Length: 162
Image (cartoon, rainbow, N blue to C red):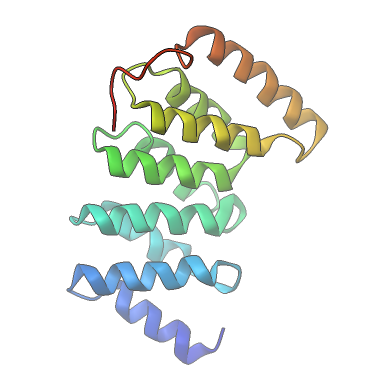
């Protein structure tokens, strides 16, 4: 990514208008492989605007664990337990991209019968996407999925529709 584009995105990440910060985060998400400033995304995980926080969660997921050095992962994991449904949905979506470190958090969302079925289903699909990345991980996911499904009520009607 050209330096001018990176500088423009960084400036928009600090913009006063939430719409501009969200747009900048979308650009980070699109160009995650070329983005070199995960701390700029991390700062927006505490943004006062919920839509900006959700966009920051998605961008963090695209940046991945290696780029974030574990810092953003901790924030995404915390957001997966947020009382705000849009934030939890964005966190679950991001956890899918993070992979192995997110397995426990995704299983917690899956087993939480208070969560809407749509969110729990997203967690299930995120966990399933971890399968086939490698044999050890697949075994861990399948074991954890079996335990989570045994403790859940996913086959029943959704008592908490989104």
